[in-house]
Image 1 (tube, protein in one colour):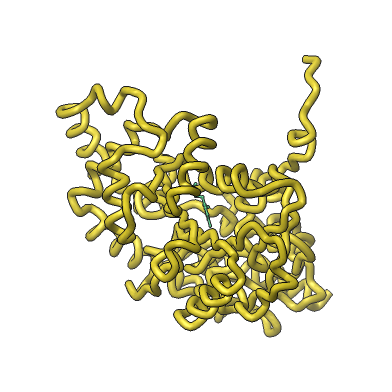
Image 2 (cartoon, rainbow, N blue to C red):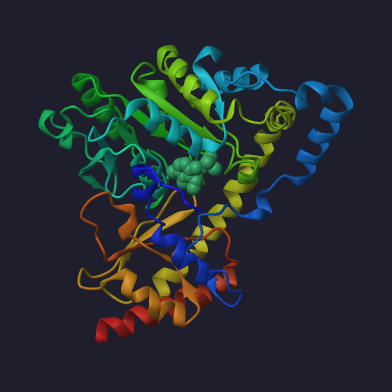
Length: 387
Ligand code: PMP
């Protein structure tokens, strides 16, 4: 076909990870690579009952077009969870769509966008379409370093993209002091924050820190998702923002897809309004806590000296740091040859990648296979250390 691709399309890069992950779909591969929630947590029966109720009661409205901002009872439910007005809430087609809409309405070519080091790859991909200049903010095991947000570094920035809880990819969490300092710094600089929080409910202990949104509702655009607490195939997330910002996001969303499926929104509302999450979230937490504990035991046992990793208190990932002279992308070939996969860390960096890092997901691999896979990975790393 004789098409001329747009500059935007020509700039699109296939994710290196996508190529790597194709290999990991082979059944013999023990894959710590995927970012998928465990299908064992999908509340099949509750969703089936919710769908049945919907068909029994109000099927026509569920199958009709609806408002761009979403199904009002679900907007109200989300608003109540976060103590905001429903007029600040819009349902989106996964929180990934909210990232794209934010890029559309806030990023001009070359406008600075602040990101953590490292950060969620899918956000880098979504924002990249709008041609920002990414500025990597120095970050440590406690998240982004607030003092690093100097007037020089943040000059002209459209927003800072922040993942305070059980971050993808590192699993790290910002403590309360860090959150307060970040908010104080952002407010001083007049810097909007985009808070992405799909893992916030997955604290193993149930303890949570306040959201940045709750601390500064007029400075934060908040993204939530049902992907990790119900199921990602629903493609349901939401954005909370001051009305003027929500209005622009709504205009962009209308052009993109008119609205998120009203059917899905009603099924989810039927399910969550019965209190499903009160019992369901604790079951996910305890499963993931056990999976994480198995991963920590396996790493303690099998990793050679010189390798370190963090001990997440929630979520799905841990982050492994190898000695600096090892390259996790090169190591991947050796590891996959032994049927063990992970995601190399480099693509999660907007600038200067730390190539000696990698991400492990521990929620979809059964415990016995975690031990087997980490023993193999440990020996592959050990061989490279000696090479
Ligand atoms: N943000 C982060 C940090 C994620 O890890 C993900 C999913 N991997 C998303 C957003 C997108 O999630 P969804 O579109 O399924 O809500």
